[in-house]
Length: 167
Image (cartoon, rainbow, N blue to C red; front, side, top):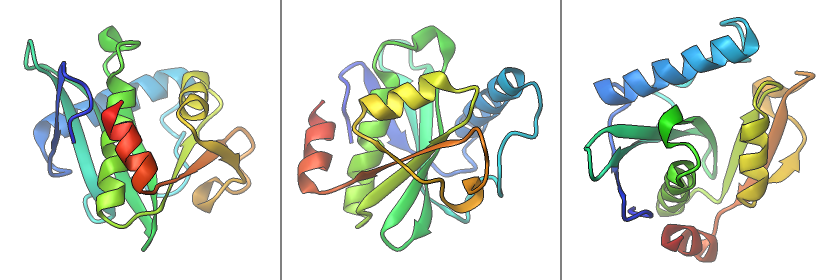
């Protein structure tokens, strides 16, 4: 699952306190960006519907620097949820490393397609997914009919999972 020599990426329970702290920080940042706490269509992810949740730690300091999870949509499709990197480490490859680890885990679990969504206040998220090989797709699930929502998808196979895990 390791994708970056400066990081230690670990699978943790959804309820793990470090993961919960990172998710709270992400939601606070999104609340500020959107100007409201009401910016997530549909139910928020939970332990019951997340197939995996990862936390990235800086090997030098031991500090948590990012996280991300996969919510199962059906037997072969998952949605990336709560992909977040602490602000002071942005641009250092943490998000790409967490994404690569999520893709490798998806492949191990038999997931063949992953989806993602970025809202109107998340230009950085839209660019990240497009630069990571995701294709724009029609809005799915709770995002159908959400005017300023952008959805993406990427097929996962042995080649893509191996390639991203080596990145």
